[in-house]
Amino acid sequence: MVDSSRHFLSVNVIKRQIDLMAQNKMNVFHWHLVDSESFPYTSTKFPDISAKGAYTPKHVYTVAQMKDIIEFARLRGIRVVPEFDTPGHTGAWGAGVPGLLSLCYNSQGVNNILGNIIDPTKDANWQFLTDFFGEALDFFKDGYFHFGGDETDTYMLQCWERNKDVLNWMQNNGFGKDTTKLLNYYFQKLVKLVQTHKNTTMIFWQEVLDMNVAPAGSVAHVWKGNNLDEIMQEMYTVTAAGHRALLSSCWYLNYIKYGADWPDFYACDPQHFGGTDEQNQLVLGGEAAIWGEFVDGTNLTPRLWPRASAVAERLWSDPGQTSSSSAAWPRLHEHRCRMMSRGYEVEPPNDPDYCPDFWDPQYPDMQT
Image 1 (cartoon, rainbow, N blue to C red):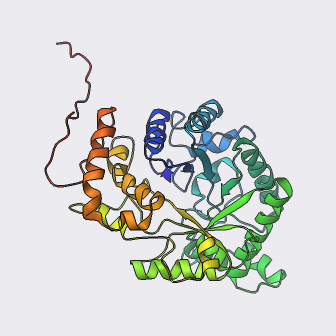
Image 2: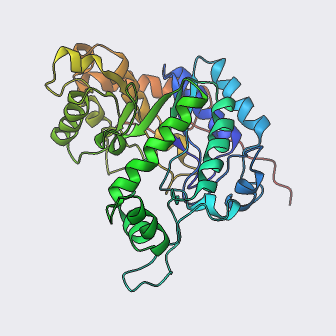
């Protein structure tokens, strides 16, 4: 997963990652296109969202550019799965769709908090969501589509419970003050919206599946857990409930530390959670993720690679062949040199060593 909303990534930077994915046998590009900070996706039906929600008019992906990226990936055996995270993480949508976001209030009732969650009580918003997702589902041809759904708790309090209009609607519809019921209502309507439009497998961050509002066959994207035991418990819980699962918790590559961290990536196996054979069959695999708060085109490639190479080997290879990180490092070193010889700025994974070809960026001639 690559995040192009916190920091915009150029088409060429994205293509470089797709090229490297192909060299590492990764076959799904999860594109976290938009978020609270910016909306670079160009919608033909709703051009105002990117016109007003992107950082600048230059920081957008045109329809032609997105088609180019999808085809570039297809020719390398890689599917593009987009993510439009809702109902939270939608702050950048609001300027282009007036009334879409709920007004938010602090504990004193003052509206001094930026809206960041959709107001699901308005019919106009559901018409917008129907049209918007209808267009997006037609544009991205893959059978999987990521609808997000994470981290809504804070905004449910500030923007729903403290919003008098939303609260009145909830009480009139039998929800009382229980914003969890309103969140369930949102996802139930979203599911019906998608199901009536197209036969699409919906992926959600795991919170949505935990609430049991997603349709049968949905995929839970597991991202929680502070250590390996907690992560495996999350996988056990999700699969025990009968959900298909995709694991990312072990491989958040935006997190860095001093020294080599890639050996930790070999310690995580998405199926080693003590489940039954039936539960193991529900595990689709794993996904390396890099969030963009501190990553842009200048450091994305070395931050990702060859650390993502270790993830790829762990997920694709027999566990018996990848259980030893000490046995893996010569392979990782050689592969790093291979990628660097092809012109990619791939960081060294180990202590001091060298490659036959050293990295040498090309600078334009400087005129005095």
